[in-house]
Image (cartoon, rainbow, N blue to C red; front, side):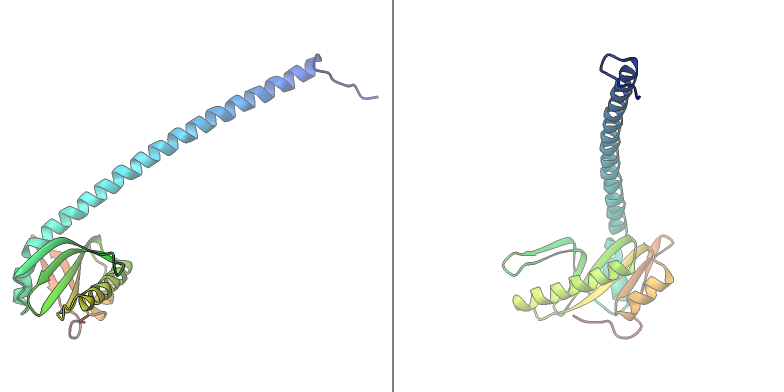
Length: 188
């Protein structure tokens, strides 16, 4: 015959103590996980701020000399703007341009990244398509060219950009070089 344990028996007290200990351990683990989560959120926020700042440094290194470098390639853009935002709420067109060089006939939209990827290039194609749509809606008949810049640009990413009609901007010592697209630059 099996023994029946009651709340007053010694085995029950031991099990109850163990349950209480496990519950306390779970509370402590939960507290530590919440603390770790807060620390990770703070780390991610600070790391995001750092990478954004580094990206801004890259923009400020490249932007000032762009007009002169494009003059060497036969393009005169007397007007240059950094961080241009387009927000056409009526037509639901929204985008940002890192650097935009302009003259009466053409505008060059430049996307600047620390490490350039094919995803960035595809995103810039979408940005140029939005720019074309926005310009058409507002009677702007200029053609739009694209350029991408990266402190780190692999050979296959550079080739990808050139084949899509982009100028590729890369650091070269204390300055930078611009490689024109393989054929005529794509115009949007």
